[in-house]
Length: 215
Image (cartoon, rainbow, N blue to C red; front, side, top):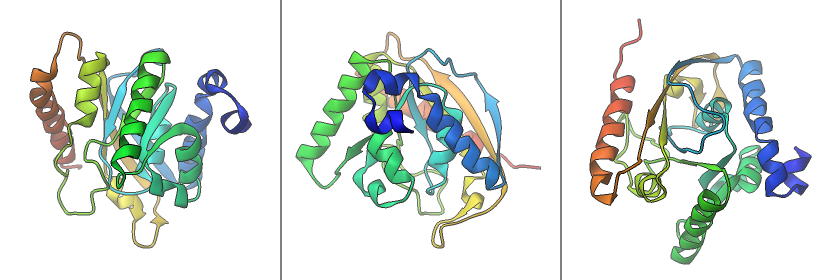
């Protein structure tokens, strides 16, 4: 972990596998397992990752799946949560959503990473944690605009069963399985006029998985 605290960006890129396996170890010793399904992720590719977001543990699941150098677009409040604070500080791009200037600064930093490095970005399209009984909250446009403007494919990770793995009020984790579905959506040749169609296509794909009945 020292390389993430003291290292430069080039060193962090070489050590991107550390948080992946750290998250895998946390899940293993917590009795949590992942059934990975869908398309393989290219370890040498650059993606805009999107995923559903319902509790604190889902970021650990998602990070254990991602096999590329990653930056996470995260709210600055994560710095108050143990371990999540480490991820946000050293592997994230913290955003103060209450400050328009800080939000713009964070978005510019994200674009700089996309253009000047091989970093992939994780953006939760719902914009916040889903505390409702709905399968998904309405999607924001940011992830889809970013992917189209930079012509970077979207890697969609849908976690089914994630609500059962943590009591968000008590912050208690429970052993068991989560089904993780991975789908890749190309953006080459798309422009912003295609954004709503792309967003609807990805949302429909995620809802399809979340509505599946597990036997």
